[in-house]
Length: 266
Image 1 (cartoon, rainbow, N blue to C red):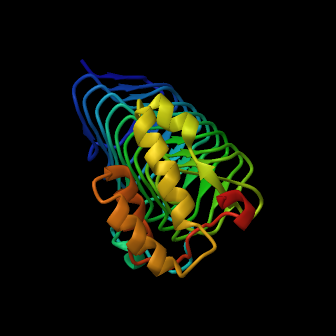
Image 2: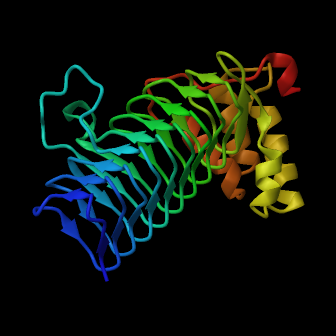
């Protein structure tokens, strides 16, 4: 049964599924789709061509689906898709896509967006991602599954954050972060692998050991990056996680790869 508070303003054109709960003083616009079990607690505004997946909870004063903060945007019918079982805490802002980025912003399933987090236009956020309080994603940022963006961190537009990566709190990230990597700092540098995260995700001791060996080779001082990647591919070709890192580094990107200070790669 759908439960809509008497003070909520819900467009007759919105699609509201069974079991949706819309709390006091919420506003739901024309093009919005709320799937089964979605809960807008109170004072939530959802607008634009926005779909929110089943059992997602949105806390007070969040702004979801309003026009992007991009001066090149001129009202194109871009979309925002939010998956299932997400928790979106107070004062979170999420913008839809733009013509320059495929017209779509997408958030996966089982994500946690803490207080004040911002996801800009054309971002692609995979499953199980956490944005800690006041974390900010610039436009066109991609975050892989199980990525964690620490509190008060800012990710530069077009940056890729690989899966299982950890961005330390108060970091400024302007380069791509490898899968399983850990970065921190104002103009962040790669600190090593996200060992704590790997253990929490039940990676085996042997796999972590192999990944550390490969990491040291990739970021060694000898030879070119291309040569080192070839050597690692030959030595660790059967290790899926290592190959994830190599494919990420080799992929096309407008941003450079975040690297360690050389002493840290030893």
